[in-house]
Length: 385
Image (cartoon, rainbow, N blue to C red; front, side, top):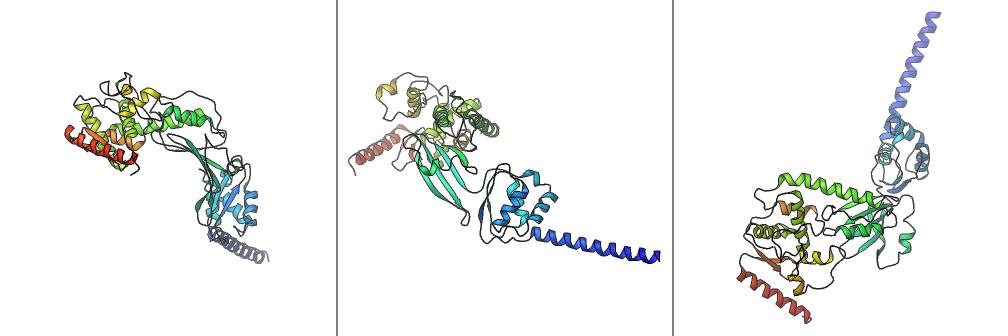
């Protein structure tokens, strides 16, 4: 009899094991299978939420078929403790496995409202935009000049909301004073410093920020980014450049940055200055004169006077030999690359050509002809032609 009971028990255990394996296999399949979501949504994970709360919210939005399986899958993959607060785009038909990955992988929010502070040469603008999860395209909510316009309701209503993300975009060629001043006026940052970093040592690019970050912390990030760029690019410079240090490379790059906004001619402009330095010619570039007047604190807002072109400042390259003592702005990566890898040309002159770019010349006669053409264009525009 006991043998019969043992045999029945073993049979029961085998059946139970097969059933368990089948249930686990079914659950794993459901966890990885396409979900019921009919169209993409923005899903918000509140600060302090747990996986149970998230699973319930996802079920209410018809994004998951089983909150229990969702939690079990998150636990099994050791991701339950990695939940990140924010607003995330969940695509149509997303599996429970992919949703767990979306809400635990970290990084910036991928959905919801985004506020962008654009620090430019002349002004700081603010753009508020919201992602349409279905089209995966941003829709503009508000846009205004930070210094001249009153903040619109479209900005005031979202800047303190949980889930709103922020970024600062710094334009190439902005000065350290302009950047520091603009950061101090951004109301989601803590204005803990007015100390201006050295000119040229802030990398112009996009930086994610969060409410409560400090101005000094954002500036530190910009310095670290510029240091990383220089550490990468300086060892790969071409031979026989008339610059002897990364600091001098930043000076030259800043002049290139201020002289042209046309990406395709940066290396040509760089070749002019490299040729002039190699030949012992003065650089004679207007942006350095302007920096000597403004010290980077704002824009001049008018043309240069002849007395200013002759005036002696450490930055006036019509007067001094070689490079000025500091950069005159914060150059972007492309201008640094141009300074370290200029085109090989014989150009020693350039002047505006009326198209936004420049006409280059290897000798004074050709340059004077280019200047005459530019003056004619200026005169025609002044006459309204």
